[in-house]
Length: 284
Image 1 (cartoon, rainbow, N blue to C red):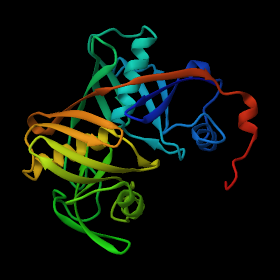
Image 2: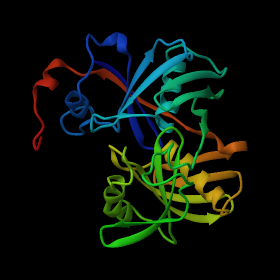
Image 3: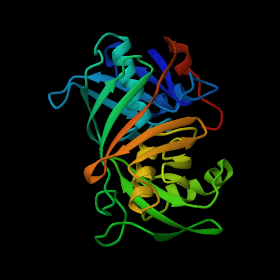
């Protein structure tokens, strides 16, 4: 299996072109390839480009646990850079179809920065989805382990739960993120952001990502957290999202339409040999 590896602020993905595969990868094979001891190691696999009539390109996004994700902001930036590096696009805008809808992307002139129009954020319970009656999910209570939090939920093609706190940390995300991700009120599970508002133009988040765990950075999480910060009146429309891996710029338009701009770094390319697939990781 041939791959190209990139990262967006430490959130790393392997891009795999379907033409280089003779069959679909099973969830177990995806888990192995993403494993940091038994495989290449990554936060997921980006499978594309796939032909489609609905956009210029189609992309499938797989989490390291083998599940398929609807959308990934870092993944979309990385895939866009891959398309640029392989000569399939230039610096003009183009569209990508994901399970979470069609996005518009543009590789900026220096090729190290990519802007993605992520679509519109919704707080509607039915769209996210969140169990319960019809409503916008804003300022509700949730218990996670030994603590109770106040959260707001949102979707930008994939589900998010944003918890606003005075202070956030990696330990907090690792401790309480798994409880919230798997809370039964989220039928499709959820991504979790623990958010500190710094000022009108800056927020800090720690991320527990559905299907991946603790994550240094996330584009869709940044989009959702910024939208919630604006919805709650904490921030304006131009927000810098600060994460352990680095910063993303989020611009909020009419109807909570999100433009996300951030870096992509090319790491390496190579092959996963057949022998690797014959070893079963310890603990599985």
